[in-house]
Length: 399
Ligand code: ADP
Ligand code: MG
Image (cartoon, rainbow, N blue to C red):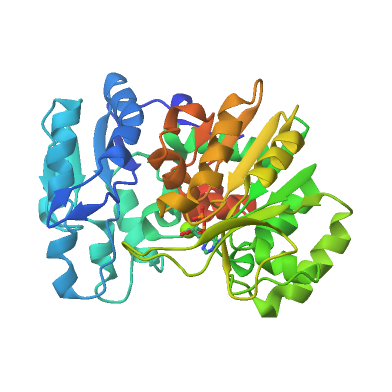
């Protein structure tokens, strides 16, 4: 068990909180503030418990000096001020006298936020390569470290692992705690039957996820483009569908190892071309072993949905990664939508989505509130599903 913000005394302490404020922005305007909203419980808890709150996050990629201005956290500080209904003292730098003075002058209940941690990536990638001097410097600004940035927990950066290595108390914030609890428990300690649904673009992206879940789940339902590599491994033709020929042998090996645990779609929705805006397409549903040579599979068919529903009956834990089809195009979002629906109707089950595109698909299709947990960290949740230890989690003290 990891220590959380509840396990430390925050009163009169300078509390360094690593948040994930890597919000989408267009021309300096925040287009979705969900990540800021998700951090509020931790920030408010610290304030209510007498802390001086120092916030920091990365934002976008900063490769050269010219990237800094476009990736400033200043607009985020403004939005946070509105959400907290409280002054946020924004320090437009990542180190030096201005920052140190701001921190040293804080009173209980104050909130200071400093610039994008990735500004330190110019030069020498100090943040992203976990430069020891930088982690020690940031740690020296506070008394307690709270890591609430699950989205970057799969990376050892100065702003998570670096600080934790140089401070006595490193604890999880509420968002981090929630992610560890749901994804961690689902994978390592699932209430059974445990069914995994794996889709998305490529088998090659998900090798470790499939291998890890094969040892943990009771059933694995395969969909998305990655199904076609498995089709080929079965000796079925895939037409012009996405298929990774280099991984057919690997898929064959998995099917043998799986001993019936892996369930493939029984039908697929095919089209004569990958639809671009306004294209007129020819679309039909065919059996999985009957894809015409000149057509491509872009979604699972309704037969597959019925098959998956049967497999899901009685499941107590379901983890889903990877959309069932090209959900970005309405005609091929049907399968992904039907999986959302099936999981929403599943009674008494813990349902979890891990994966960037799967999470945005479920949210886009209106199912945000219907899952037990939708992970906020695409890459981080995937690595969790792979069974890897995440540096940003490992650096939090155990209870
Ligand atoms: P996640 O981010 O949830 O891990 P991935 O990144 O692996 O998911 O895959 C998401 C992408 O897979 C989506 O852009 C979707 O359009 C694509 N995809 C799903 N099914 C197909 C298919 N049959 N053909 C081509 N692309 C597909
Ligand atoms: Mg993705």
